[in-house]
Length: 374
Image (cartoon, rainbow, N blue to C red; front, side):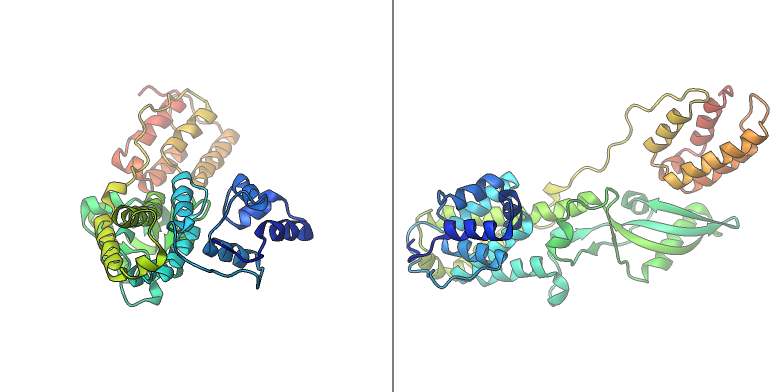
């Protein structure tokens, strides 16, 4: 594609030198690998008109010496760029969506453009509900009161839904909010509607007794649910690009494609419907502990590793050491678990998902730690 007298290679070299950037830093700004940027700067790669415009926009550059003189010939190299980028992980999902928006405008595919804009801008700006693959079951982080004490507890979705269906939520945020490197290992805190509070409290009272009082609740979107949304968006883009090549061939012009904009719109809708809730992309949750650590009498490090295995928080482990240090001032008799430790175990058991399933497990672990015959 002729570009008049425009020289992207020289412009990139000059920009990098003037600003004192390394090639890796420029590559990062453009969401590409260092080698891919190097080929651009050396003039080895011949990017499409739209790719050049995107590069100039990202770097804040302008040029009057570039024009798109024709759109005939092979399908835009943007398609190859997006496919390779997604398959090899060299571009972000957000960058791929921006490329797709450019393509959608060029071929006048309204459904594709609207979908890409919703994914990049967030669905709250649009009257329609988010796509089905954005549905998720929330976990909860709660503070509650029981037996005159205040406690914290994390509740996974499968625990609540094994008792009673609480509801399905829809994640409306832009894809950039998901594509962080990376979200907290425990997930992402999300806003839960206030009406969930009394429903959740009733469910928990059925399990833990009528004196269970829910004080605060925060919703939590698990990492595998966030990852599923990213994978679904990437799959939709890849499927649609492959459908274009299958239906129209690789040598079709953009002008020819725009003449089939209604057919392309229906093609995209079929792709969207085929992904649906993306159940085939469901990722497994953290597997259950297959081989549990063997506890050793008096080995505090091993005991804390065992607590880590069962997702006991650092705060609760700190309480263990506070009690342990206090007992050193007045050592308990040999062959028993101190009452203070029993009280700590009861508190932890009441607020931990693993130990609630086997209320005697933590006490059993303490007995081994203190050398008491189990």
